[in-house]
Length: 410
Ligand code: ADP
Ligand code: MG
Figure 1 (cartoon, helix red, strand yellow):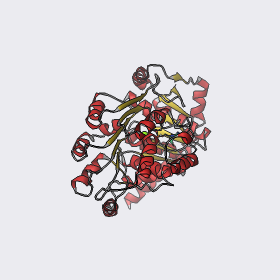
Figure 2 (tube, protein in one colour):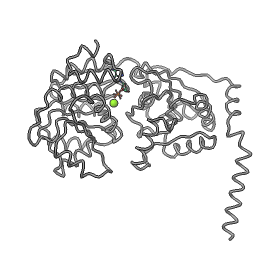
Figure 3 (spheres, protein in one colour):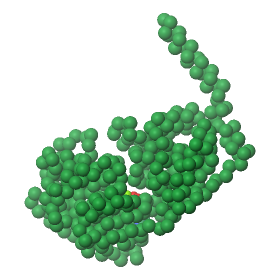
Figure 4 (cartoon, helix red, strand yellow):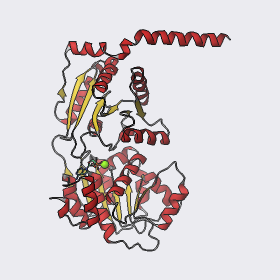
């Protein structure tokens, strides 16, 4: 069924048309009518399946239809998300979808001047997007009254628990009105999530889209055996063979991220890094550069890239395999989003083979092997600019060192 046939306000049909969304995704198809009919829902669907619009479309439509805001109603809908980056991303989706409506959305994030945000809340907005920590803080300080909200959304609920927001959510729960519509979205489900979910929803409709293969069918993914020390040459080759494409590179740790950055710098490849050690401002900037395509290669850790939706990421490289098998699905899910296709390649060293096995067990099937011929492997190392420049860089390093020594002597 096309969006044009849906019982949603015409302003939304227009923006959906602008965005090029013609048909709903599976999760949208199943959730939107239920949400419009006032049901609580508990929805589980993989990464990149359009969960954001699954709640944003019906919410915007209902908010546009009923514009009346009661006195002291700070907000009508609260959307809880695990990270600030996601808060901004989802705010963007609400703004794009709601561009022809009067629905007002704000995201509140830490680390910025709070006064203007509080002022906006005092005047009232329709949709508020923030992390549970932020919301709990605002309620605690008396800036936010939740007693009159109509809708509560929990997005990426599994990640909220990973980020340790359980207690914040419990805290917020006391301030919520009993009569409200609650929408619960998660990519994965386990016992912890179930407990939280059932504490929040009442008589929910359960929607689960879980095909046998947890990796999105739009992602073509394979593994290549590459020795730990040779990984940088293979990354260099892939990057140089795809000069115009956006590539997201995953590494295991912050230190590894910086190391890859340096290794690429040596072969004249510009990358940016995203990880937990960076200042918030830096992280926003890096992400923005990547979104806008000013930087084509982003090297990130698992946590920092959770749930991100960046347009045009054609490649995901698992430079290191993820420690947790489930994260494999989250990582490769950064590409092949919506109706787009994507490619993911994992570098697996000898040491990482046990992890590969775990991942394959989790996926319940082997990952396609990209076999590299010996000659091709050697060629990859040989054509690296790093090798061509080896003499030059040694000379440069020597010169730099002797200069430093001279300085010290002075
Ligand atoms: P999820 O939260 O399930 O991981 P997102 O909500 O971030 O996924 O959406 C993934 C991508 O799919 C986004 O880039 C979005 O613009 C696109 N998308 C969502 N719904 C549709 C649709 N009905 N038609 C085409 N593209 C869509
Ligand atoms: Mg999402």
